Length: 322
Image (cartoon, rainbow, N blue to C red):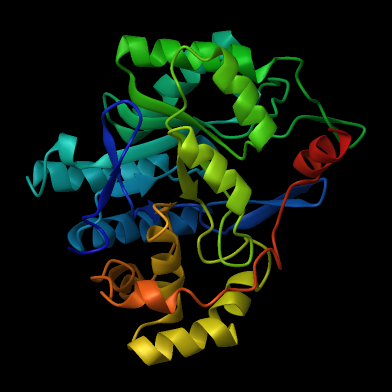
């Protein structure tokens, strides 16, 4: 079985492919609180569409996007072109998108979801995630609303946002709902009141930031964990650093694999969904290759855990206050 064919069950009876294509593409940076938020430039649109087409042709059946990535339209065009070609049916492709922070007000949740569906040209999402637990005020035209250089946080409780997302499932607009960038205490609080249990928690996860306790907690409570940065944190040159790690390179050379394949295998064997991003055809195809059957014993080697990570100041401050 190829990496792109393997699936893991969700807590609602559905399943998600363990390998997907991420479409968070670095473009021009908008910085707030020293956070680099990369948005796709118009010139990259065709590259994103082509990357998704290459992935689908290579056997991927899982594509991850978000309204803030500005890649939904390109993902939709690529998916629909393959559906029209009858390469696969809609039920065979898993599409994830995310609710952005400015739309946490319950009244904004459904319109935001409908906009994502319109961008994608699809009638439903397989998975809709709350992008972060932190809501921003909904200021027209502002993705990061500020006053005096400070983010304008909303007073909307993410519990209320979640309840509005549950209604999307009831309506059939989304098959599954989940969260992203939630810490354990936030997940615990959500589980205590949720009518529909979150199917996924998508977080930064890679050998340098293993988040073992978070993974253990989520999995023990029936929540699948997705690594949104499986090849390293989205800070400058980080991916190059992790791909040059001597331990990882040694394992890769011993098994005739690339460093990226080893890193992805390390996480997939832990039943963690991985969504590596790439615009390079050869890398997209390499990441989907059949997994080496004897890697389980090799991965008893301990990677340098929790060495590096990229966490927003808001998330860090919330943890420090608890």
